[in-house]
Amino acid sequence: MIRITPTPASQLGNTDFSKLEFGKYVSDHMFIAHYRNGQWDNGEIIPFQNIPVSPAALALHYGQSVFEGMKAFRMNSGPVSIFRIPKHLERLNRSLERMCMQPVPAEMFREAVETLVKTDIDWVPPAGEGSLYLRPFVFASESRYGVKVSDEFTFIIFSGPVGPYYPKPLRVKVETLYSRAARGGTGAAKCAGNYGASFYPTRMAQQEGFDAVIWTDGQQHEYIEESGTMNVMFVDRGTLITPELTDSILPGITRDSILQLARKMQIDVREYKIPVQELKQKLADGSLTEAFGTGTAAVVAPIKSISIDGEEFTLPDATDDSLMFRLRNALNELRTEGSGDTFGWNTILS
Ligand SMILES: *Cc1c(COP(=O)(O)O)cnc(C)c1O
Image (tube, rainbow, N blue to C red; front, side, top):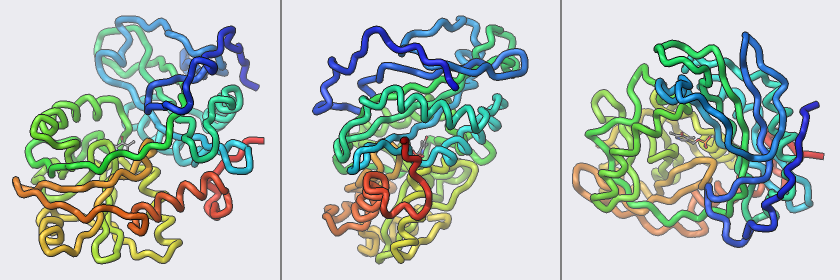
């Protein structure tokens, strides 16, 4: 049992659920646990609040910090369901291992996530009107400025309601100067530093009028990797294609879910190393009809044009019949109806 200290001052009444912007509101409570002297404490749920952090905390200097992003949904029938808890835990622990950080015990993670969502259950938006975004993260909290692997860690989960997110179709460029991740690097770990390093190239692309970049491999910039902070998929003559996972691609859980759903829907799926020049050819001859990003926040983010070597290719407008929206709707339905969940992805809270 996790100890819960309820907030004396709920912010629920000050939150406009009709105007939810991603990342704007936090719910009333958070879970916090500490790893010290070789063990995790029990952790507790407390009102969302600032925390004391030593200026010498190792995370602030040497970047030992990893995070997750996951969601809870209100189902049409009323109960709340949390999406793919074991898969998020598995990825969190793989990221932690890559950063020489202490893994989070499975039972602690599951209980913390479930108890936190139950505590803030009124913060889960109505079915179809958004979801409760959960942000688990772990950082090196040992106060010591000599370079070392931290012996102390803080694990926090907080949450916030987010609206249904229909991003405007993106104008992107294939990036061939900067890299997000290198072979042998940390690209497959959801670590804070990957984001810090991606801001500058993204800002440069935005100054040229693009919304985001499509990252390519860090060696030769010859193969497609990801789109901004999302995985990327294309439709090539009806076949769903996406870069196969490597150690420089973040293994998205939305990516995995969409691929599994597509296979179940008898759609042809191919995961392979997609050469930039092949993509350019397919855009030029019209065989590529859809491009989109996938991630927990947006689920599916349509791409309207792709610039390669200074040449911009515009894709047909996405319609309700587009594969990307059929897949997005199937995933949303699985989460709010529960009926299609032959995978066991939903944890339905009682
Ligand atoms: C989190 C993330 C994704 C998407 O992963 P999801 O599990 O689908 O949210 C894709 N690329 C990067 C770089 C990420 O950090």
